[in-house]
Length: 144
Image (cartoon, rainbow, N blue to C red; front, side, top):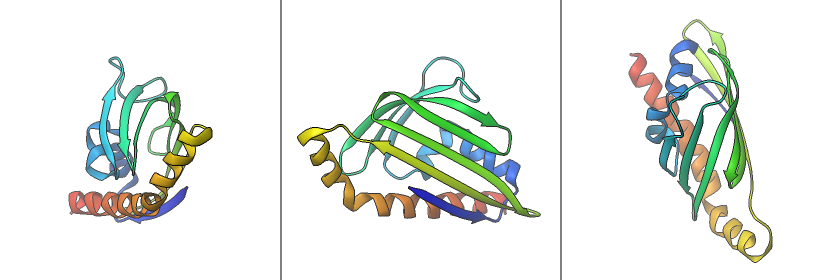
């Protein structure tokens, strides 16, 4: 899944908001829990346990594999549902930021995986649209 949005807020503010795990439930559709594993909460090496509900409940532990201030955040799962999230932040004009998100996941095989895929299918488009719209709205309201 790929999604790009433009937000009327400075890149440093957008990056800080997305990088702060305490904000994530406010904008990411279906996220029911995200808890740090250990004391590190940002940058390469930070880990989180999360639960998403998008038709079915998905659990995963993600590990930050790449992090560049005001530019990039990337997570890869190390346990649970296999997934990768890559968020890039680009200043497109003074006070305006483009966020590009690439999220991929792999469900288990066999009948269980097929059932999960069928349950999730109606929610994927909704999740992408809602997450993008909420991220833009939350940041533009904060930036005023």
